[in-house]
Length: 405
Ligand SMILES: Cc1cc2nc3c(=O)[nH]c(=O)nc-3n(C[C@H](O)[C@H](O)[C@H](O)COP(=O)(O)O)c2cc1C
Image (cartoon, rainbow, N blue to C red; front, side, top):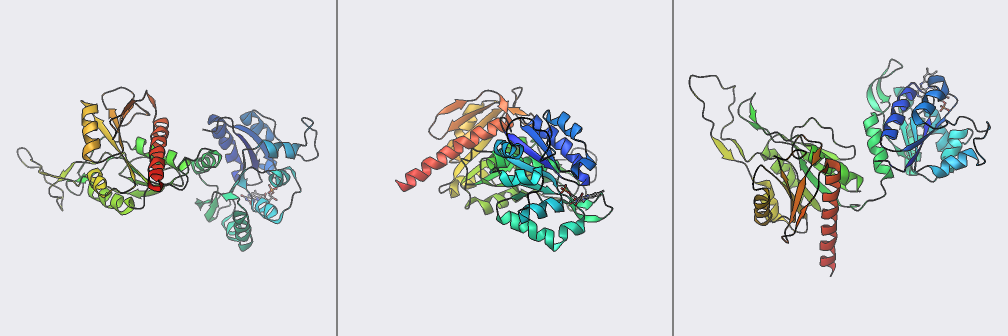
C-alpha cells in the first residue's frame, strides 16, 4: 500500500501521456497523495483539468505562474515527495535531466528533490535506441535514477519495437517496492513455491488440484517488497508474478522437485506454499487413451516428497511448509513439522469460509517446531504473507545470532 506517501508525478510530452491518467487513479487507489507536474508539451496531449480531477489536487505547470501558497513551488514539491515519478518520460526530459538542465518546473523539481526518482520512458523505437538516449539512461542509472524499461510491440507512431510505455502493473509494482521502508529481508534469498502441479496421464489429460497459487504469489510479492531476492517456483496458474521476482515455471511434481533442490542450498528462507501432487500416473501414455467398454483403472505412483527431502538436506535455512487439510488440521500439521524438520508450518482448514485455495483471504494457524501454536484471524493473503515472512525473518536472525555466539 502507499498510505501516507506523497508521489509527485511528472508528465511529459508523448502519446502515452494519456496513460498517466490511469496511473494517477491506481496510485490514489493504493492510498497515495498525488501531485502532478506537467511540462508544456504534456499539456498538448492531456489536459491539466483531467489530472487535477483524478489527483484531487492542483496541477503544477508553470515555474513563474501564480503561486498557490508562500513556498517556492518546485522546492516545496521536491521536499514533499516520497517518490518522484516521470511517466511517460520523453527522450527530451531524459536528456535534459542527464545534462543537468533545469529550465522548467519539472526539471527543476527533479533537480531539487532527494526522493527516489523513477522514470518510465516511452518513445519511438529509433528514439529509444538512439545511442544518445541510451547513453543518457546509462548516465542516470549510474547516478541512482531508476527506470522501468519500455515494452515491445506496436507503437503509436506506426513503428514496431521497443518504446511503448511499460505495463502500468509493472510501474505500480516498482513504485510499491521503492517506497517500502521496512526491509527486514534485505540481502536474504527467499525461495517460494506456489500453485498446483499437473501430472500427465496422456498428451491431453492430467491430474491436478484446486490450488490457485494466490498464497504463494502473495508471499513472493511481499518478500520482494521486504527487500529479499526472491525465486518463485510455480506450477501452472493464471497469475502474473510481481515484477522483480524471478519465476521458474514447472508443471509436474518431479519438475518442481528438481527446480527447488537446485535453488535450495543458496536460499536463506524456503516457503513451500505449492499444492504438490502426492501421486502421479505410473505411466504416461504417448498417445491419447481411447475410450473402451467398462471402467478404466489408473495406477498411481508416489511423487518425490519435496519438503521431506529439504528437511533432510537443511543446514541453516529456515524451512516453512503449508498444510491444507479438511479435518484434524492441527494434528496433521504438528506431525508434519516433526517428520519434515520444519521450522514452522502454516495450517489452513479448507472447509472454513474465507480460507483456502481460490479465496482472497486466509485463516491460518502456525505451529512451530518448539510446539508453540499461534492462531491468526482472517486476513488478506498479502497480510498473511507479510506476517509469515516476519516470523521467518526473525527465526533467520535468531539462527544467525546462534551461529555467531
Ligand atoms: C504527436 C507527437 C507525439 C510525440 N510522442 C513522443 C513520445 O512518445 N516520446 C517522446 O520522447 N517524444 C515524443 N514527441 C516529441 C516531444 O513532444 C518533444 O520532444 C517535446 O519537446 C518533449 O517535451 P517535454 O520533454 O518537455 O515534455 C512527440 C511529439 C509529437 C508531436
